[in-house]
Image (cartoon, rainbow, N blue to C red; front, side):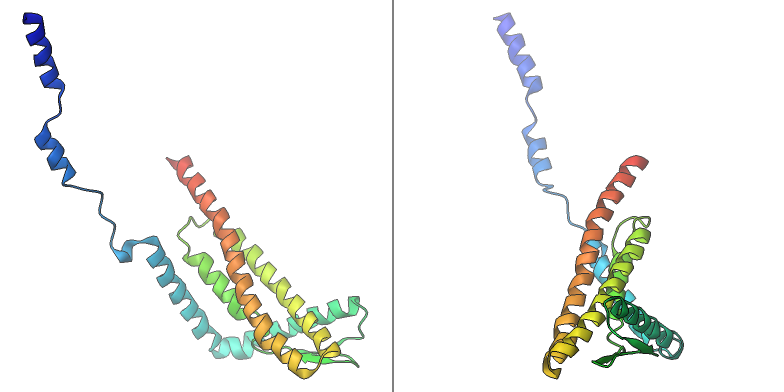
Length: 206
């Protein structure tokens, strides 16, 4: 009997307190942070702010009159060089690439500046450590510049072999949408790698 009573006493000490269980159960799961503190909210806000800054920058005389003309001429020179490699008798005059079969004038909208601005804004606004952003910006912009070269050369051949309506569709609809898609894909691929680098850096500093 004595041994039984001691066991019961010991078991009573090990049993949890029901009142404490009910009290802890009332706390529930941890509360979610406010909307303005969530990473996705800050990402969207930063993205829009940086894009707005780029749009204002593109409207300045410094960009329109000083930076844009040599930039467009550089794209024309690159396009003319590639067309010459492909056997075309291409010549470049300012931002115009012309031959005896067709000519294209590289203007605003054919310069890939807006897709590049979207990519830059998305990379800078991403909530990751800064170190992966540098190679991401360099490689991503080089990729978009290369794709813009492909666009100009392809439009040159579309103009040779198809009529004006097809050229307009490829120029204004197909390539414009494709470039936005390429900018998003480039950012997504970079973001997957940057998140891994951020986790690795946090583990290393822990």
